[in-house]
Length: 391
Ligand SMILES: Cc1cc2nc3c(=O)[nH]c(=O)nc-3n(C[C@H](O)[C@H](O)[C@H](O)COP(=O)(O)OP(=O)(O)OC[C@H]3O[C@@H](n4cnc5c(N)ncnc54)[C@H](O)[C@@H]3O)c2cc1C
Image 1 (cartoon, helix red, strand yellow):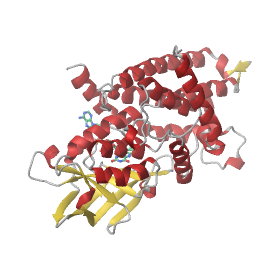
Image 2: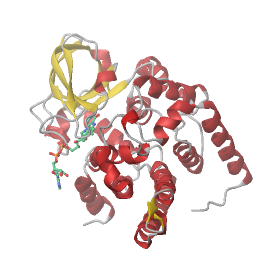
Image 3: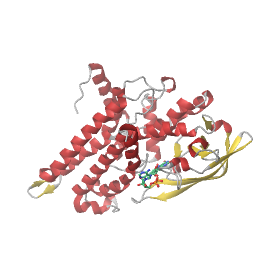
Image 4: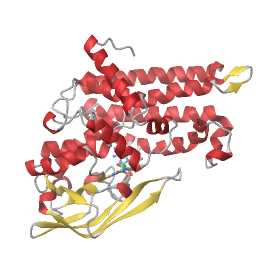
């Protein structure tokens, strides 16, 4: 898509492009370009580089480090970051708990948590899902019971992404079992170093360790760590989940991988020419490019219609279509790699296959998760049917 940018917006974009391509560590950008895994240090260091330049939390209130950017500028920021292979600011901090504390927290909570959240001095984890409470999140059973000013928490969370690196976890807990299930939930912030918190790894299909179970046994949580009123947690949860969906349609990154896929196809011999000369491959790439362009236009519309920081219901369309296209591009890359896609697990030094081919299958397998997390795609379809189509 060619956006007709004003001179000012064009200059803004050029400034961002220069920053992202010169100030962010080249090793980190190369890891993202090669579809490798980032270490905790790389994630934190990049986030801090962005924060120091005022580029980590532009969507927060200005008072807490946000920028009063137009929706178009926010889009350009996101787009340029992904294009430059810069890992976006840590979502748990920047897109999830930060905006919730800014909107629902007390003044003390804002002062205590927002600056270290913006700078990842606190690495947050998300403790919402439980066995038996994923799509049906309101069925959660982890219980918090009053003990003087404190809460005593018992229960289990699951699928906690990067929980092994978490300093604090924002949780939904049941504070009232005797009312309609949505009405008895509260949001608690829990220091993961508290006695009684245990993080257990879950191994994924690609062999990586990205998600965990988190167990709470008689964990004492100070009353001041409650966000909002007792039993009002469902309101904060809905606010947070809507933002989460906006963040999980990585249009820029998918466009970048598709552009890379074109280069990889052009560099792979096939018959008398290259894979890119194969009409089947060319058609597939052109179709994906068109689909991505349509999604980008939708993303712009959604951003432009988000009022007062509240997510537009069409964020579900972005989540659904964004993850479908992300998966389709990862599948294309596996097909381009051909038999080379089976070479995963070989050490880098043991193979003369290009890195992209060796990483194609683990990446493909890993991205199966995208249609599940952030609210499964079937559930997004239900939301679209109910709130947008009025069915
Ligand atoms: C890699 C990964 C990372 C995650 N990270 C986190 C995290 O950090 N923190 C956290 O709290 N959670 C996390 N999650 C959990 C995620 O939010 C849930 O997996 C998701 O909400 C789906 O819930 P579930 O897994 O319990 O599946 P279920 O809800 O049991 O669903 C099983 C199947 O039934 C379908 N289904 C369920 N309800 C309906 C319905 N009403 N209509 C039609 N179909 C339906 C689903 O689409 C799915 O196909 C993560 C998940 C994954 C896979």
